[in-house]
Image (cartoon, rainbow, N blue to C red; front, top):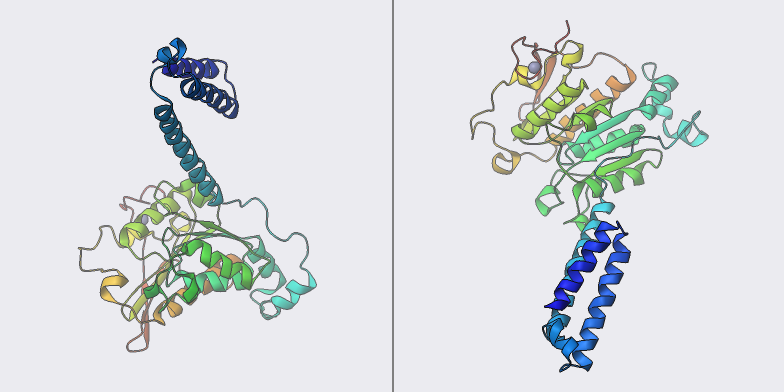
Length: 347
Ligand SMILES: [Zn+2]
């Protein structure tokens, strides 16, 4: 057993001296190799007997440790490829618009409500899109096309065949790929002037820091629990939230902004709907073009909000009935006793 004690002693000494990990590994590897050679070449010697075990046993033990280290190295390399926090420090472009940008955004520049100033506001904007699904697809494409400078896209799902009936940002050959990364590729291919950071995870109620790095959050997730979590993070950070929801033939879109006098999701829906009353698209079904309509409305509201054009949906909810081709506008109000934003409302 002397061999094990020697290895353990060397490891403790190296840790005590705070040697770099690679040097410790190299030292332990050399000692292990020496022990294996000793046992293999002089199996009957007193030193070999004191070491304990046989050469094959030490080889197997070494192989197991090597496999564990390789697995850990591969895992950390994968993690490094998927950055957990987006880099939103610098926009792609700086200074006045290039000739190419002037040409690309020409139809915005001639709009009185957007113009050059509005286009520059879009370029300077930081937007977090949560959910690269049916609603996220048009939001991602239209905001990238519109030149929103820095976009973070959060989604923990992968592209599947049943998504392609409505999630028009993906191609058939992208099945199995992380949605955030596949969508980010499409957005970068559409407009190289925007910087897209894919985030391969969900956004939780604790993500106040992530949310506060953005000017606007757009929620296209399809579960009430996810929407509640995003709403909490947005209220905590005081950042406005454009939220859309769809089921079967109907959809809705609104702007939650309690920091500027509007309600939050908790004001309108204080309790989660009973299971079965608000089923996700997977159970209830959804007509393919509906997320195109609602997602495009969300992108339109985002462009209005960022440029200051027109009047946003703060305190209003637009409801669209695709089966009968009708729209309705419903007034919404903040509730002072809302347990999410109640203490943060400013009137
Ligand atoms: Zn509220």
